[in-house]
Image (cartoon, rainbow, N blue to C red; front, side, top):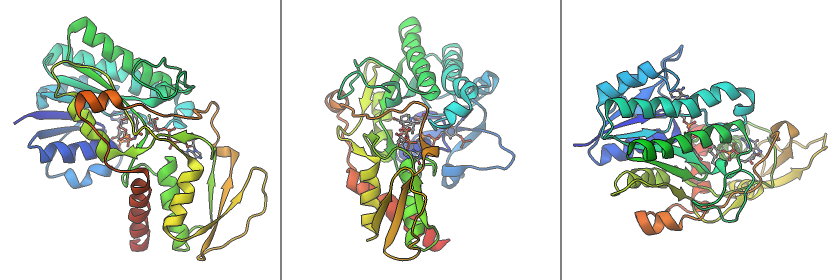
Length: 337
Ligand code: NAP
Ligand code: G4F
């Protein structure tokens, strides 16, 4: 039986990855942060199945302790301050967790279990102001946020430990992936919960920032399989994981409201008045500059051909299915609450 240690197990990807590894017979350990109130977030259902270890990416002593307790064959580093907007508000702690935190865990592996295989959660945000369309493994990076910059450090230090010490260390450059477990401040989940609340008469209006930004969106359950595949190869390497198609925020909004048969009234920048269609088949979606970013990533589109040919990975959930699953889930959730 193999053993895995997952950092970020309470998050979207960490919880799906734990489900997946358990189904494959792994013994799973998960690093969780101590908070004022015990909160397992997305890992609530895993409480009896996973060994939780308290720790923090910024506290190397806790990572050493976690490595000694788990003695893992595979380490998945999914922990991060992952919300791009928050990285302008907390740039230093973002760097501490997302950049230095990666060195903390790599050093821990090097010292305690150099044979453990390591997965680093890199991101398409590193492409930022894109230098090539579509983006592939060889595309130059140009991050546009403190988050993107911190992740670029994590990406390069992973490569460096592979080249310096011969660690089996890989980075997955994952494009946006969403799900029913996505944090509610990310745009897709913000939209799906708003659609559900508007449908149930519990919200009047949906306010968003840049509607024209485009993202290459997949489902988290497909993407965590790629993480596992990367650690099952003969030699470590880095891979782009994406769907190869992108859509605007506006398109996501349109499909999500269509799912519940609600017509949209768009209110552009500067619109002061808005109609209220509470509990009817009409809704207002309004642009609010409060949600604009100091520097935007306008468009992301990944080329997953290397992962498809070398790992045999393929996404299964289509864009339409993703929107549908998120809206259906939130509708049930809001109706129940
Ligand atoms: P998420 O839902 O925000 O989960 C982040 C996890 O990191 C949570 O479990 C969080 O714990 C934990 N964490 C944060 N700071 C920590 C610290 N100092 N020490 C220990 N744990 C800490 O993120 P996700 O969407 O699952 O993404 C997983 C990883 O993939 C992240 O590294 C993210 O940057 C990267 N990524 C995500 C996407 C995407 O589209 N989802 C794309 C590319 C890369 P709490 O529950 O205590 O907050
Ligand atoms: O959903 P988002 O906040 O995700 P973003 O910034 O693309 O980052 C996510 O994907 C990255 C991979 O590319 C991950 F590395 C990262 O951890 C995270 O998971 O925003 C998507 C787009 C942006 O262009 C943003 O400006 O949606 C636009 N947007 C428009 N209105 C909004 C809003 N984003 C948010 N969060 N809230 C809005 O009201």
